[in-house]
Image (cartoon, rainbow, N blue to C red; front, side, top):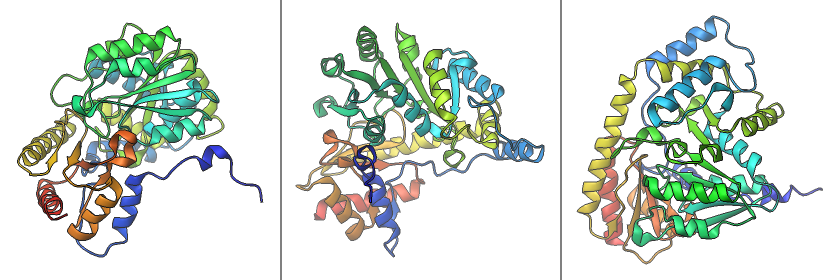
Amino acid sequence: MHEPTVRVQRANRSQIRVMFDLAESVDRDLVRLEVGEPDFDTPDHVIEAAASAAREGATHYTSNAGLPECRRAISDAMASDYGVEHDIDEIVVTVGGMEALHLAVLATVGPGEELLYPGPSWPNYETQAFLAEGEPVEVPMPVEERYDLNADRLIEAMGPETGAVILTTPSNPTGRVFDPEPIRAVVEAAADYDTYVIADEVYAGLTYDREPRGVAALSGHPDHVLTVGSCSKTYAMTGWRLGWLAGDRSVIDEATKVRESTTACASSISQHAAIAALTGPQEPFEEMYEAFERRRDYVVDRLDAMDGVSAPRPEGAFYAFLDYDADAEALPFAKYLLKEHGVVLAPGSGFGEAGEGRLRLSFANSMDRLEAGLDRLAAGVSEY
């Protein structure tokens, strides 16, 4: 029998999902802090807009690029919230941010070319490089600099073989928000190599300590930036699978063409939901944001007072990236915490070389569950 292709065999399962599946198989009370998903439901006005659209017959294919009114809502939100300017013909609506990332990598990374990204990083980037028959290249950021973007390291790794560079800000898994100066330096260097920076900004709406700004808005070369966005995190719409890719029209046209043979278009119903989320009442989303910020502050205070655990202060998203005082690799230690102490975290080794010996904690959970989970974490580190 013919073997599956190398491009799919090289892909690895996410260690986040390894822990998720293990937790699902355990019959005991667990505090689940491993998955990055808002614990809020989609607000009522978004659900009602989608239901109304469905009842009124909006249940058919849309254009491959998406409904013009959905792209307009995305364009306006990107400009007002993040300072990134794009006409609607420079935006394609996608099936979540993951498809947007996939299209961006397919359009920029050729066979044998490199996809660069600072580590620790979301594991999806490695898989996306493999699917494009490219080579993933993690460039570890110095832990002593608390994983901030070190532009010199990333630029030194660039070369003629660089297909694209990914910048994720706010970062998954560290929660760091990169400063404008190193971002500008990386985009300028990428432009010198006539390559693209893919700005993964799905957590941009969850930026706590400064005003959110898109990578394209911070650069003198916005035409060399492709922006990935999503309704999933900021608007509590993970199950609606609605994202977008925005950038130079020549790339967007090619990415849109590929969709004719993959997903064709994003869900028509989800596009109407996105319009309501982006243009309708913002108070429910502001309440979610404030809850995440309070949880962030609580987690920071608890970790500061906890023996044997430390983490850079998360400036965005809903993650803390923990360094623990235990002589154990990340995956076995995460399994120990689950089995012996009933708290589930994602192993840092699942986020690349730079994550080994660390754990990712998601604070997308209620305050009482966070309190219980941090109590269990402290006991586990103490008793290991």
